[in-house]
Every structure is written in C-alpha cells, then in structure tokens.
Amino acid sequence: MNRYFEFAKQGTTLKRESLAGLTTFLSMAYILFVNPLILSDAGMDQGAVFTATALSAAVGTLIMGIIAKYPIALAPGMGLNAFFAYTVVIGLGIPWELALFGVFMSGIIFIGITLLGVREKVINAIPAELKYAVAAGIGLFIAFIGLKGAGIVVGDESTLVGLGSITSPLTLLASFGLIVTAVLMVKGIHGGIFYGMLITALTGIIFGLIDLPSGIVGAVPSLAPTFGAAFSILGEVEWTSQLIVQLIIVILTFLFVDFFDTAGTLYAVANQAGYVKDNKLPRAGRALLADSSATSIGAVLGTSTTTAYIESSAGVAAGGRTGFTSVVTAMLFLAAMFFSPLLVVVTETVTAPALIIVGVLMASSLRLIEWNKLEIALPAFLTVVAMPLTYSIATGIAIGFIFYPITMLVKGRGREINPIMYVLFFVFIAYFAFLGE
Image: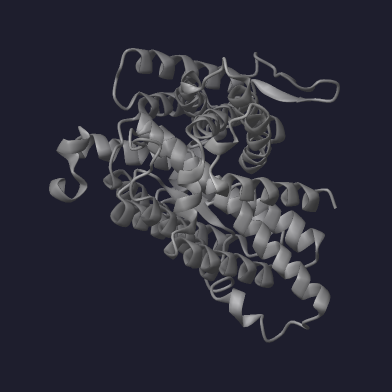
C-alpha cells in the first residue's frame, strides 16, 4: 500500500490519509440527504435515490483513488441535480427516467472524448492565469456556501444578500466552530478542519442544537425503483421530433456543465495538493475518465450527474495527498448506507466553518495572477467574482474565457493564445445564447 500510493514521496502517512478521507466525507456527507430531497421533487423514490447517491459516490471515488491516485471524491453534483429536477423534468416535462438516460449518454460521450485525449488537451490549453482564477473563484464560491449555511449571510430583498441574525443559536454555533477551526489551522495542527467539525458537532449536541441520532444502524433502502430505469423507459416513450431535440439539448447541457465544473474542481484541488507542475496536470486523463465513468454508473443506479467535489479540498487541507484519501472516503460512503442515522449530526452548521476555511486556502492562488497586466487581470477578476455572484462555477469560467481572447488580442498578444481557447470562446458565446432563449 505504501509503495502503490507513494506515501513517502508525497510526504504523508497512512494515518494522515485516513483522517483526510474522513474529513472529505464529513464535508460532503450532506449530499446523501440533499440529493434525494431534490430528485424526489422530480417524482423519484427518495429512498432509492439515497442508496444510488451513496453507491455512485463510492464507486466514482474509488475509481478516482485507485486509478488516478488523486485525493478527490465524487458524488452527484449540486446544481446539476437541480437542473435535472426543476429544468429538465418539471420545466420541460421530460420523464425522470428519460432524463436519467440523458445523464447516461452525457457520461458515455465524456468517456469517448476522454479516451481520445480531448478533455486533457483542453485543460492543458487553458492559461495558468485563468486556472489560478478558477481555483480562487471556486474558493470564494465554497466560502459563500459556508457563510450561507452558517446563517451569517442571508437573502435580502433590497440588497440581494445581507448579514444574518448573529444572535441566532445555530449561527453562534457555526461562528464558534469557525473560530475553533481557525485556531487549529493557524497552530498548524494536521486535521484541524476535521477536529473543528468534531468539536462543533459535539458542542451542538451538548447545547441541544443538533439532534442525537435515533439509532446506530438503519436498513438500506431498496434500489429497485430507480435501478436501470434509464433504459426501461426507452420502449415506452412516444418519440417526437420535439422530444428528440429537447433530449439532445439536455444531454449537451449535462455534458457542458459537468465538463467545466469538473475541470475547474479537478485543477483547483490538484493545485492545492501540489500536483500541478508547469501548468500541467499529471494523470489528468485517468482522473477525467474516473469522473466520466462515474456519471454513467450513477445514471444506471438512479441519480443525476456524478462529478468531482470541491469539498475534496477539505481533505487536502487536512493532509490528504494520495489516492488512499479517496479510498477511505469511498469506504465511508458505503458504510453510510448502513449507518445513515448517525449522519444527522453532520448539519450545515457543522460543515460551514470547514467550507469557509477551505475558501481561504483556495483563494491563495490569487497571489499568482499578474494583476498589473489588465489583459490578464480583467478576465481573471471576472472569473473569480462571477462564480459566487451567479452561484455557478461554469458561468464564472465561461465569462472569463470569453474575455481572455479579447483582452489578449487587443493588447497584441494573440500569438500567446492556444487555438483551443478560440474554440472555447465561440462555444461559450453559443452557451450564453442558448441560456438567453
């Protein structure tokens, strides 16, 4: 095990990797409950989706850990599940079974272009400055999610967002957790984020702010209502030209959003772990293949697009540097199917401090951007600020990638632009044109 995952070379240990895997799992365990709730609005069986969520996360993360050897976990993506339920099923009226088929096909296309090396070439063609901006933007985005989960930032009709009730018990608990986690991290304690979450959860239980679990072991819900439903409906659907066009658009949208969400997340976490060298991501093809395979597997099981999770950065911050971190996370997702009652203590309040601290760590890449050169600073800034303000990683990437060729050409630096960036320029223009319809 030490030889396969190269613990010594990466400067880590089995204990540290295990703790990092646990930290990653706790940071993203909320998806086990949020995803079934969202997809149940589309008419899917909540229990089956819970099991599908755990299994797809476990399988995808295991592939990432063993094949790509990255400390990156996968699970059904937030945002993509909302698009699945509210836009595709409820908005377009497409049956959820057929929507799952759309997810499956987007995964198959992903696998194809990954094997051809297209995705890896695209990622390596992106200039370093934009990659730094993407990493920092995701950091702000994840910190915003944490602040929102803590109740520190709330919606406001007149100013869009505002300061929440800082005297609220749950907000006070999250603030306490943030202070504790910050102290541990400043002291340089490995696993400070995990210990901060643990202390926050225990404090919440002591003061009655977090419920004790009703039991230890629970029955695993049946997967039958969703397993293979993506294919069983194909013979029952009345295929019209309108439905075919809609399904193609849905597949391409799943493909597009997952492509750039994954690219941004993968680079951000890998950069944080110290894997990026000379603007290149080693074993990128394997990591992308793990992600695309997990999407198709998840669709067969009965859940929306499975993708790399930015919460993996919490595990990296806790010391995770190898694929064994992902292996531990995968095993915990499998165990979660049997011990789901214990997960009630992992609330938004508990995970909020971890997400905020992770945002701080990821925002550090801002220092690597040449802010004195406006042709670089402008697209980088727009990438960073658009992610939290539009609540979309993909939108932030799109805006920055549109402005980059423009500012570089105006400055007379067009020869420095990789031809793939020009292709992406027109792709993103078309993307916004589609959104505006």
